[in-house]
Length: 253
Image (tube, rainbow, N blue to C red):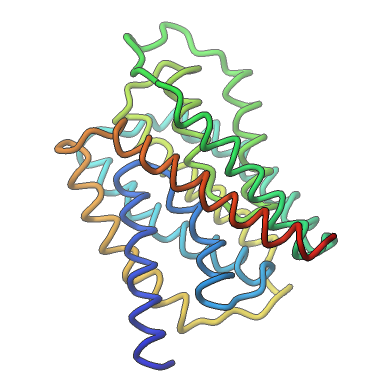
């Protein structure tokens, strides 16, 4: 690995970890495009590598947020448990689709998520008195399926769900989301192992830099305004999605 490649992987990994530690999501939706367009991985290999990188960074984030009491373990285990089952099952289907189709699906998902993130999402006024466990299970299954199929941790979907549907405070939603992401990523990785070769050196660089970014991001959660960061990130996601759509649609047409 050249010095330039090492530095590039380090900067990209740091960015992924920073987004995960700060927002409880977002880093995962960047990892696959980064690996494909900047590192040169195939989409299938990028999906698998993404699950390793995002899972490792999320696991560290859990420890950091747990120390602040910002994890709802009951919701995390139920939501994440449903997600793990569907992440494992969905991982077996991605190899049946062309690379361009996977990237187009990824870009469309990014557009939807970016639009949702632009909408004002005020923090829940109070903790829900009685959680609807059916919603928790259905939400976990849906996010898990996306995790396994597209290689995204799903935090950008989990956090709004926890806040708007289940009534968790924003900071607790971030920490709880990281537990679920780590669980889903592990299950999705099991479904992908052995199906594509992994660049261990690149992944190690991403993970190492990402862990540093996660520490920094988790430390900033109480000092910065997540809503402002989320809106800026939403615009970035929408712009990146547009680039992916233009590039991959031209290959299919």
